[in-house]
Image 1 (cartoon, rainbow, N blue to C red):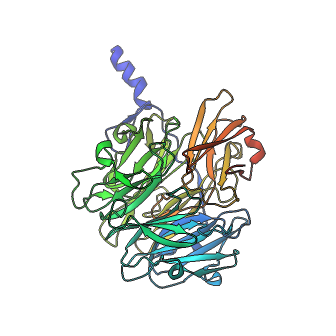
Image 2: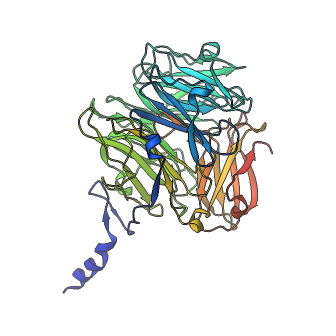
Image 3: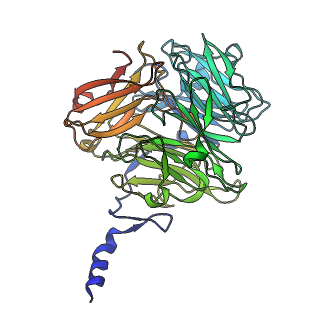
Amino acid sequence: MTSLTRTLLRTLPLLLIAQTGETLAQDAAPAEPKFTSIQPTDFAIAGSLSNSWADFDNDGDLDLAVSLKSGDIRLYRNDKGKFVNVGPEVGLPSSGPEMRGVAWGDYDGDGWVDLLGGATMPDQLSLVFHNEGGKKFTNVAPELGLTIPGRSARQTSWLDYDNDGDLDLYASNRIGPNALYRNDNGKFVQVFAGTSVSDTRPTVGACWFDYDRDGDLDLFLANQSGATDSLWRNDGDSFVDVAPQLGLDNPSRTKDEGGVGCAVGDYDNDGFLDLFVPNYGVNTLYHNNGDGTFTNVAKEMGVAVENHAVGAVWGDYDNDGFLDLYVTSYVGERNKQQPRDSLFHNQGGKGFVNVLTPESQLNAGDHGVQWVDYDRDGALDLSVMRGYTDQGGHFLFHNDLPKAAARRSLSVLVLDAKGRFTRMGAEVRLYDKGGKIIATRQVSTGDGYNSENAAPVHFGLKDNKPVTVEVTFMGANGRKTQTVRNVDPKRFAGKSLVVSEGN
């Protein structure tokens, strides 16, 4: 046996071919994680599309909103880990026009998160449900100016694009121009109509993040039907599409290809927010180089899969300190589609390995997906939507991570100066005792397929040593950081560290 042969035999067990069949990861893949299906009979409802989490009743735990093709918007109240649909009793529709997306945000700043449902068909109107003290929801879209006619809704995002302290609204459109609405004292007025962010390309995914670190949120759009993607740089009084010059436009697509979603996360813990785009076609992962430029590293990282990807979301499911990536996709002919999902385990920022097989119980979604710690045990649970076939459902899987590993985590809730959930797009970073960055998270502006959570950010940790927490807020005078030192993660088991702007 030659020395080369001996070397290959020693090395081969450590080389795992990623799903592309081209990229190799140097570390052995972990076993498929252990999850338990929660209330499977209750949640096995066909036509489940989007899911979004928020504490609508301010009782300290996260509740679940689900949109279905039937027009039903289900609101599951979390009663100590048991989920009860209270949608009908609080005034949400149980049938009617399909609302493709759901987004939580406290648009009027009264301390109670409100819910938007975007109409899928252009002859229907979007709905905005005002939260009346956690007891009742009332559709106020006409009074607000947010019925948004002529729209086939996909991603909708509440965010403060102009840094004036209140939530504005961005509405993507699958069949026509997108629209940005500015919040003027509780009424919404469209701005940049007919130009820039009123992009006429068929948009499905929209993610806002401060890619150039100038203190305001910029907009990435994942566009369908062969259109190029866009990155609209926010210059305050105007927006400029810089995707072509940064290589984020993904040109030369066929009419069957396009971007379907987007997810923002710092996968390599260098402090800069990266961008994953699930595509009809080959998926892309744009590494943020830290100087305002990006490099597509999907192939070398093992995620350049050519599939019918729909939704994607980052989350550290095993609390090893690195963000993992769940991607929903499907295969098969129309009305007979089957899930073909991926859970890409992050191999220390050096590559990803899919730990799911077609037979995995977690291979259950073809549309929406979110990570959420619904029982506050420190481990991220999985919420996935299956919209196609009569075997559909909105499935919830409890993460059965061992208790010691689950407790190796920290939850951070970011609020504005008045204690309201309005700081979408804020960035949270952890540093160790020596000042070295550990990880970065962003308060979501939309991901997971047409949804927006109002939830804390979750950090998995390699150990439970004290950390420094730094929150970066966007503001009229640029980026402003707030620091909380010597945070002991063990003190926040079962609850969140709350950081309010200016406090």
